[in-house]
Amino acid sequence: MSPVPAAASPDLEPVPAEEIAEIRDLTVDWFVGHARDLPWRAEDRTPYGVLVSEVMLQQTPVVRVEPAWRAWMTRWPTPADLAAAAPADVLRAWDRLGYPRRALRLRDCARAVVERHGGELPTDDTELRALPGIGEYTAAAVRAFAHGLRSTVLDTNVRRVLARVAEGIALPAPALTAAERRLAGAFVPGDDAAAARWAAASMELGALVCTARSPRCEACPVRGLCAWRAAGFPADAHAGRRRTQAWAGTDRQVRGRIMALLREALEPAPAFAIAAVWSDDVQRERCLASLLADGLVEQVGSDEEPAYRLPS
Image (tube, rainbow, N blue to C red; front, side, top):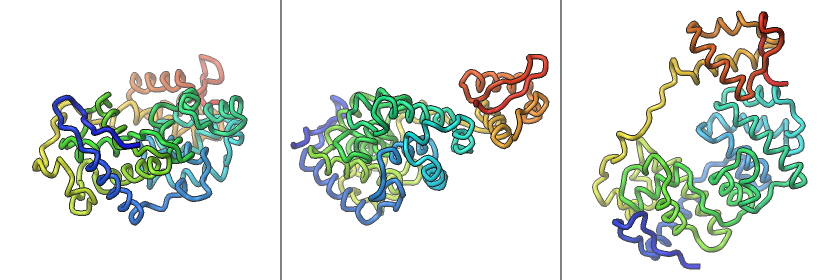
């Protein structure tokens, strides 16, 4: 199947099919010699192992994910193993990967895989996206990286590569657009194996070379075809719309401190122990309430003398 010439917007000149093919070939050839040796890419990987890696890698760097992934897969090597795990054990194993709701959603997903699919991750996009915690990107990634099937894998790294190479802009818009989906779809080869290779290669190029802050253009295999380079590296047109997410003093930091306390606690933590993690009473109580609402913490004891623990 030949790709349709790509254009992200009516004002953008379509990328010729021959150029798309050359960009793909150069990127895949580069990937062969530069791909990182990651355990979820190994020959003995399982679809479930790929899913775990994709969930862990959301907003978390590879250097932190790899040891956590290895420990997780040793402890819970199949969806059935994870489905039977206690929520508190899952949250402790998640440790400091961030956004701990992902851990419980992954457990919910494992239970659904066992109940609906006999413990095996489905290959169908609709069935994958019907599982808890799996959205458009994760379903596409599982199809490509776990099952070797054709799909449009469009993460932050791929969006950035295509924005620069095909559109000539520094960074894509803050929110994914339909035009970007069309552009990305035009780059996906027609057969399964080639599509899966392109997905992995374009993602790796964005992660290692075409990075957001310090792109290594001299090492880029498609620098001679890059529209951003040809335009003189124009600045980010969306800079004013991007959020800069601080950490110090935020509710995320407070929630993280409460979760860290409860992960280490052998017994339910009394209210005075929770109070010790943050001095601002209003913010701390707000964060504790949100953790209770999210199902990440549960209260035991009376309202007069409450204590808190990870969910049982």
